[in-house]
Image (tube, rainbow, N blue to C red; front, side, top):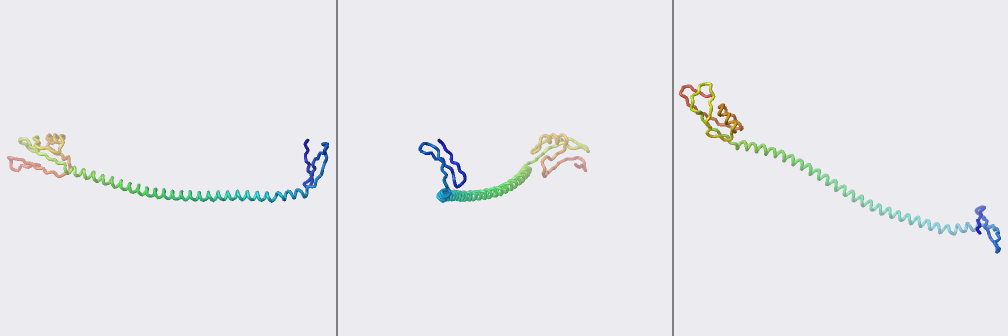
Length: 194
């Protein structure tokens, strides 16, 4: 058999009571003093428990924040130090790259100068020599003497030798100083060669 309590107000409530035969009885109880006494008796321990829980949670959170703050500070310090080292290395590498680029430019310039010098030396070492004789014929002006009998030829291509034999005109293939001498015999007074 179930009975419900019916509260009429905060100070009184109706509680079902059963006699020995199981017949229902009704009792009205004044709870004014009982409820305030119960509230006071559990209020203080509850406040202590709540405050201790809050303090404990607050202490734990504070400790956690302090540890996090210390760890975060250490991480930030390490990050800053790492960033500074990276910046230094990047700056050093930029300076080194600039120096290397300047060295490369200097080396290219020196290489070009060496190539030019090598060409000049090669040209200076190139020997050109030619000695040829004309045939024993009589020529009358305006005739170009042709030297068909080549005695010595050095540093002159076959193309220019063939041209020289057929035309009598010598073409300088290699720049430089040339000594040209011609020996002509004449039976006529006042003969000359242009």
